[in-house]
Image 1 (cartoon, rainbow, N blue to C red):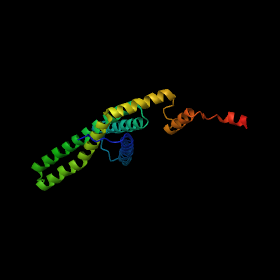
Image 2: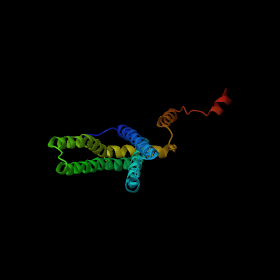
Image 3: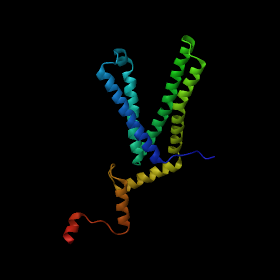
Image 4: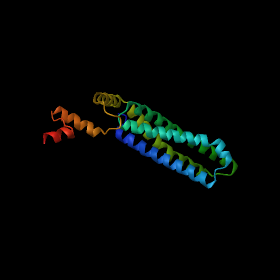
Length: 193
């Protein structure tokens, strides 16, 4: 049985959109809490650094996803790192949550049904994310993707294309050049008329 893979465009766009949404939501929530004065000083001292680090991880994910979409080799490395972090975060968060539920089980009488619901809730969030990130890591490590990104890097080096230029324009210019129909600059076309 072959290991499933995902298209690079899907990986890049999914992680870019998820990162933008997480950054916007996280920044908005922190801003709203700060403006309303509902952030206790203890939180500012203990948790604000971890929240800022979490936002930084999402920012790295967004930049890496756009790097991957543009065919840059560092984008693959950044997205793989981001996926490893996305595997670790829900597992650690879910484990911490279940540990706190276990303490409540002994202290306040959380029922066995409540425990099952808690485990199912953690699994409902963690398993799809871990599976998606695992498949993305497998895809990014494949020889096919590595060769595709190497070809893209060679193409970019050959074209001397600026990093933000659209891919379609480069392909159109390449096709026109191969056919001998190199587009003349506007000034030359006006002189011919």
